Length: 364
View (cartoon, rainbow, N blue to C red):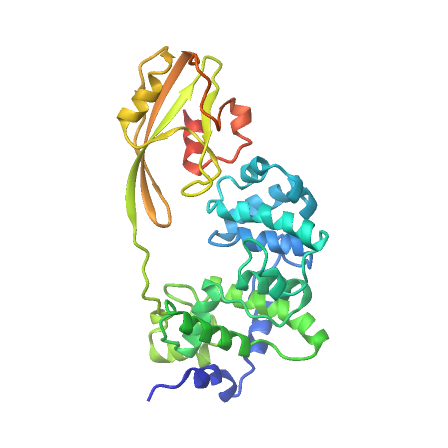
């Protein structure tokens, strides 16, 4: 008979080991240190780093984090900044809903909490863009709250240690894993948790990111490898189990790179929902006929030039992008549609643009 969830949760204690103690000791000697958002209990910096690190590699965030702080060093400056500035600083990081929620969250911190981040995971999780795991990470790092995180790295560590085969696509299975994660947290009085929780939280993140990786985990280097049930089975990569798969689709978009005699480019703001929501972008069309009809509004200096088609891969969709370059002599007699603007290179460089569009404009 397979062990119950409760029995699996108790596995490290049953083997006579201190799970949390091993993780914190390993992090102290082998974990990541020296990152610009480590060694601080400033909730603004911790929060910013946690949002940036969602679905983004550390190496990429290392470039964006200091640049963002140099322009918007605190929650007040972020709350008061125009949305275009925030999106411009975020441009290239992807998943732009994070930037929009970041901006809204800063405004809520100012309006509802007097510019001070709430000091509990429960309250933090009520703010835009802060889910349960991110709220727990902030509360743990900044105030030593005994709160579990459960990002992708931590799910991998825990399900392998416990050989936890329940399907995480089922909410009940994920709720049970939250209970396991909470049960394994360090214990003690407030001063002990103030000291241990930040290192334990960082240790779980580091272990999943550097040792208990998705493929070919480095089990010999793991501080809990000797009690890992997934390793004992000889198949740690079988965990975690999640059967729900993302359905992918594909679309073809025509991008109009329309320039005037001064070299400015026509940009339009994308809708508030959907792909590249809220960003500035070259006009997009579903087919070439629509693009040609739009260009017909202008007196062109040269024939349209078709640039090489390229693929841009999103989480759920493949975009086949067909850029067309056109230079106009004069603008149309009628006004441009609402939400569009002519932008010089210096101007569009500061705006929030989708990564492929920014690259396209820079290379043409």
